[in-house]
Length: 176
Length: 300
Image (cartoon, each protein chain N blue to C red):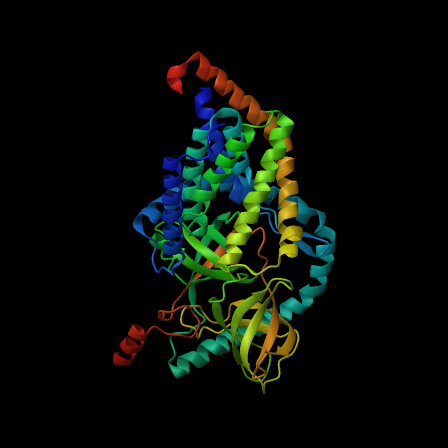
């Protein structure tokens, strides 16, 4: 049954993102902070690191397409960026140690990079006009804090599930 | 040491980038309708999303209830103070309503820009990356929602419908940075109604901009701004906000007013879509009419 867990978790995370998005923007001391939930891409990076790069890219393509069509009506943005980030994670992990702390750091760095690329893209098509420092303070920083909290809480769980799946696959190669 | 990209992979990557650019430029064009495959995906994802948003709204509802329980005493004091005032205002409203109905009957005016059929809907998701201010609601074209209809909460206007599928629709909030987003509005409170266009949003002040108001007209701080219904789609009289500052626009020809929106844009839950009773005119509620409908109107 463990083989269905990874797609199931991906689906749940995909649907959880917009619900957490409803809580944003957060008002603190009269300032507004945007928190963007990036649960799915973090899970996909974990898949790319611990499980299988190919699977991560396919999931990225699939969910990226859904995201594009359902939310932002720009087809090709997330469906390109999700697999690209997974690919980057797959290449980087070849030269580093697969320790949970290292992976968590790598995931956070890549998520920040992802957010930054999106900012540049939307600025390029002039959909947003906020300056860089405002972006860093009101969007990137709170987003990364919230997402790292999420990852610290659940990263270990992600790894456990992926490891269980790996063991199952080794025992029973037909099911891969 | 293996090469990072072999020739075959490099070609694939290049093809991918070309396809990507083509797709993005295709979808960035202003499209009138959602293509059928997109509709199917939107409806399918929407169904999944509503399964998840139900319990989420339940949980946030509990927090809201606790929050309002904590404020009960203060709120009660405040409300008591306003209760007497309310009774007299209510009597006056009743009187004015009946007088208005009588007068309308005398004039023989049946249609009113103010009348609309409310369509109740629940917000199932907000665009999580929040670059564009969009929300998804669980009513679509099968229940009569159409593009460009006004969307509001109990406290005021929040946005308009930008695309519909049979069961879901996407709403662009009024706090968007989209330069093509306009709502025709009017200012209440003076001797006569003052018309202008809500055009643009100041992200730093978090206030809307009311532009194209005649420079000779005096606007005052605190006056209320409502939708005028003259744009062709929105009903008249939906509260938009309150004027906080009046200045002259960049060309010095017309006045510009900052408006604090009456509705809250975060934690949206239940919204109302206004399906106006008076005939609608094709367009974007910005006062510009498609030529085809204009000639139709002239002919009829």
